[in-house]
Amino acid sequence: MFVCLMLAGFIASAQTVNCQFKQSTFIKASGKTIESEGTLKLVGKDKMEMTYTKPAGDYFIIDGKSIKMNLRGKKSVMDTEKNAAMRTYRNTLLNCIHGNWKQAATDNNADITITEKGGNKVVTITAKKQAPRGYSKIIVTARKSDNLPVEMVLEEFNGTVTTYKLSNIVKK
Image (cartoon, rainbow, N blue to C red; front, side, top):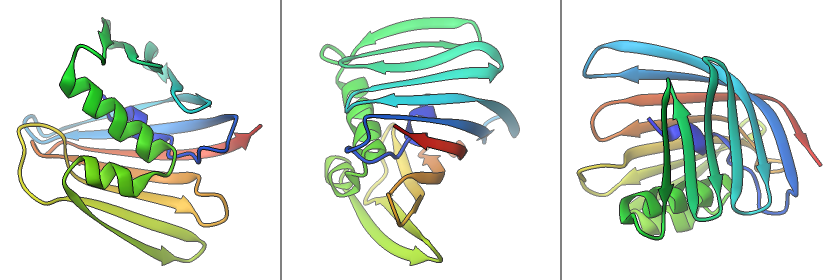
């Protein structure tokens, strides 16, 4: 789904962050797993670009109040000011991207726990109750030194689970 964005998990102080990502999405309804990969670029507080090399030509972009995507040939543009569900989705993603995990939990009526494992923080955001859409659980593993994520697992209420692994992270 659109979960690609959560990958970023980058702190707000970063001007520009570039990295490689690998994405694995398990779709419970079909029992299939879809593998993808590409590059991610975060610029400032509200712009993120995911450009896929597998499958080539796909993209997912948050640019201010709009979301633009081409996912497996299906192009769309959404105005998050007019679409409440996508606005909530955008805000949740950007809050997680910038390490505003407590705000993401508050906005989604969820509980949050933050633990440490090795040199990383493990942030778990768990919904307090079932909802028609959204995430039942988000787990972000971020480097303790700068809050940059190295892995994100997003579990949707419908059983779809997307895992992102980030590498070659460069902050400018």
